[in-house]
Length: 215
Image 1 (cartoon, rainbow, N blue to C red):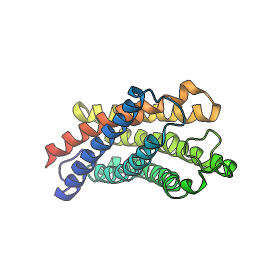
Image 2 (spheres, rainbow, N blue to C red):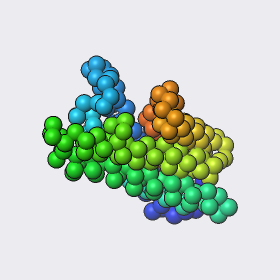
Image 3 (tube, rainbow, N blue to C red):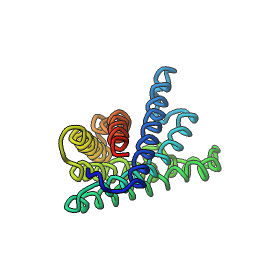
Image 4 (cartoon, one colour):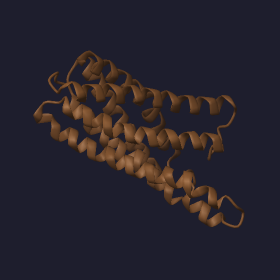
């Protein structure tokens, strides 16, 4: 990452990285509190679903802003990779936003015994749900390709090498998650969660440190 991008892109990158850290810890806290309380069922309880919706909306938007800031700090020969990453992360933002907005605005109207078929089609955690497929497409394929290209765009050594490696690892795990969803392989389907929680949070922390050093 170069140091001549200007103050505004650097501030945007730092702030969006910090927001990413906060959202990442919120996601981790939601998952851990659910397990601590013995709620490991699927679909999760309604409070966990609500928290997941709000956090997913925030992360999707934040990733687009963060990737745009990263692109500003890259040399010209690597910006094409960053642009590809930005496109895929924008597709993630669109897909998860559609699913979560449907969850928050439409789903409550169909939580009645007389609408089980409609509910099954739009439930964000239903195994036969269209919305679950849209969410899996976003976090599996689009997120996987987005952060994979982000890692290739950053490259480098030292701190940037760690950021690049974590992005690439998270992308690989997310793509395996997408394969698991398609092939109905639960083991592969579990690989996405460490990518979106632990790896993403650590990456956001390292990015915040890097942007802070450029201020």
